[in-house]
Image 1: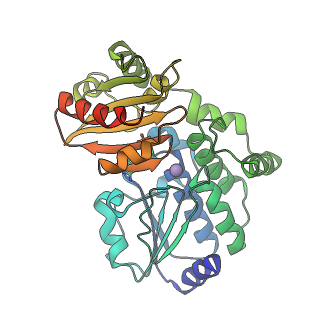
Image 2: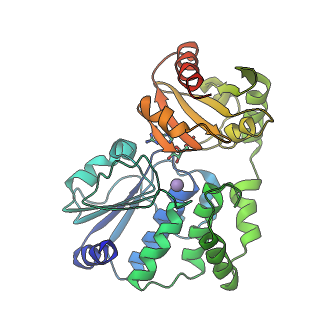
Length: 315
Ligand code: 5GP
Ligand code: MN
């Protein structure tokens, strides 16, 4: 049984490192910190490594214990959370590869099952929701601190409880968290509603550039490195742009390109029938049926053309 295997590996390990995907979102940060608190409570020697944690999540407990590199070279056990592919561990895959035992806890349909133990449920709306099963099995109480992290992951990955990935268990879990005194409204506001001035300015730029292709079924927009520099944008402040492009009547697929060191990062969202994870998988990325991404190492026009050509086959 997978949960029993996970428990035994944790019991056996003297050093543990938690890793998550590059450009971390609320589910990545929430699930990693929740697991960190749980393992600390179990008396474990544990590090959590998250590179460029967005400012939005500064309110989470134990935020200041996040490391940007390991405190040792090798660990007995590594656990990758909310990460579908070893490539997405980015600069930290060495910690994963060199650990004696490797566990993956995730909810991406495109997960490549890169661990020795893979606890992956693609119909779960957030990694944080899967993690609750693990924590319960380990006998760790979901208190206010762990619960706040779990709630953060659930709220961000469900777009505030509105995606069709939400299950009855999601609401049952959130009801339990409310009963524990967690201010759901407050967490919602912090992670989803309030945005910084620079984030707002990036949205304005992206909205002004937005164009409609294929009779309005595709919405396309982008931001450049210069845009981010002009507004002193920090990590994660482009979040929310692609959702605005998706929520326009008649749009089936929204495409948002963000300039990186190496071309553009594509974020895709769909409304009804297009599986954007399939499209991104073909471009070397992955994700979920209605939210996915890929790296496009090309100049803007070429990146745009590549992705739009792929989408056309699915419309
Ligand atoms: P976003 O567009 O918000 O960056 O990502 C949407 C979803 O697709 C997330 O679940 C994210 O983990 C996944 N995703 C984004 N980029 C990539 C990528 O390059 N490779 C893989 N495998 N998944 C990605
Ligand atoms: Mn997730």
